Length: 415
Image (cartoon, rainbow, N blue to C red; front, side, top):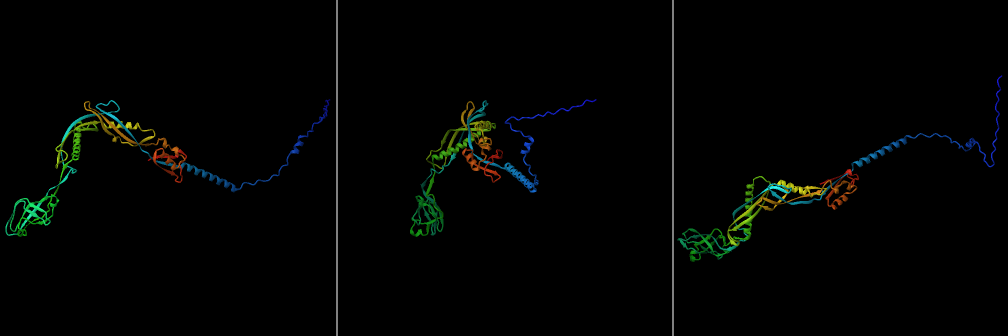
């Protein structure tokens, strides 16, 4: 017989709430009480096609504006043209000419000497000339229309219509019905005897014969006033300079021949040893003779080596940020400072100059310093700093008026 299962008895438990404790309602009841009322559902309309179009157009416009801005920034530029201030720098030093150079300032060369002399004949220049009065001279024709010969002795008088008296130089006989020519001169010295062609009477003849025997001059009388030359000191000095120049050329050629074509550079010293004149200043003469002897010293040297030394010394004076605007080593100037003929050495005074301007590496022309400036501001700045004499700017695009802010878009060119 199977056992009979017994169900457990349920115990009834009652909770007694203490005094003062609130009654706790079931959670489900609290939720229901606080749950808000649900709104009624409505259907949202779909976006219209016009909205999408506006968004697309706006995007395209923004991209276009951005592209224009990028192109503008990348294309804007300014080229600054600078006409620089030129500054002259010089190199001046002494260089020794020796047979065998041993230092950086020495050049190879040779010293030779010679003495040359010469004579020259010269005419006064006219500064010391003066005028003297003399008797005018000419030729007259004695005309004899009578039937007999008429002898006339030397110094026979001839009288012009204006009263000027002349005399014939030699005795002549005027043939009957013929003529004879004879030299004549004015009775008085001076320009009064300088007359043109005219007819003259012979006062020594009788009045009846004066009508048939008379004199005529077909050419003018001249020589009433004669200019004579006076040798002045200025004439002698000028002639001496001319003679010395010719002597120096002769001496140079003689010295060159003695050295040959070995050296490309040359310098000379000349000294007058003796000078004489055939007449003293103030003497009347049509010409005079000068004699002169000079001593000459020729210094022949390697000009190319000397030019390199001068150029190197000139470069040493170029400041940082500067460069040569013009320099020609062939323009080196050389003068003789001292000569020792016994040793065959000489000292030359050397001079070379050149013009420098600001270079592209100059801090004053650094492109970034002009950022944002106008043409007037850039020009005023560089002229004030004595870097430029003039400034111009090419802007791109043409309508901009100031240098771009980007350094890479600023270019400086030195004219």
